[in-house]
Amino acid sequence: MGYGGVSCPPETPGMKQFAYLANLGEIASWTAGTEGIYTNFTMDAGKGLLRFEIKKDSGIFRETLEGGDQDLGSYNQEYEAMIASLSTEARNFVDNTNGPDFVVFAPTKNGRVFVLGKDIGAKLVENEATSEQDGYGERILFRATQMPQKRFELLDTDTDTTIALLEAKVVAS
Image 1: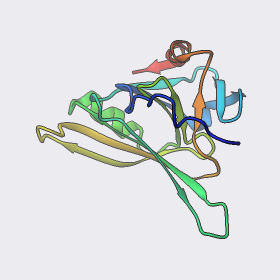
Image 2: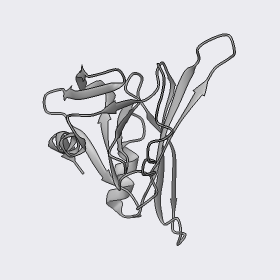
Image 3: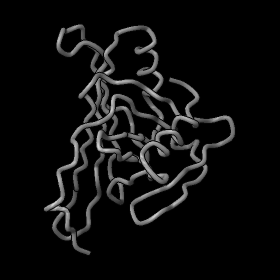
């Protein structure tokens, strides 16, 4: 149960310039791999992922343990990003994600694909649209609260195969 990563080279920080959303209620099943990793998932017939582009280096993943000293607590998972557009398409995308429970598939620059909100769902909890030069666009924040476990990872063989698996399930971008 140890961890020997201290002497390993550091991982590349940050998120890729895209992410995916799946409506939690439209995921039919998950294929488990080793502990903490899923190798695939199945969507209900005719359903799929939403893919969205984000501003370079704007994606942020966070996970925090919440709980008391006497219990195990739960995890809060967040994915924050900036969509660098104030277009009607960007507005409609954000508006359509306000309400449903989602699973966020958030690819990192080091090749991992984090799965947030798998058990309970993540909601769009913050949105700020601004025309300020440095923050131009739609800032979004999806949050999954009181998750019973830490984040999961999606990994089908390698990074390229995992991204191809996600791309094959995209129905809108």
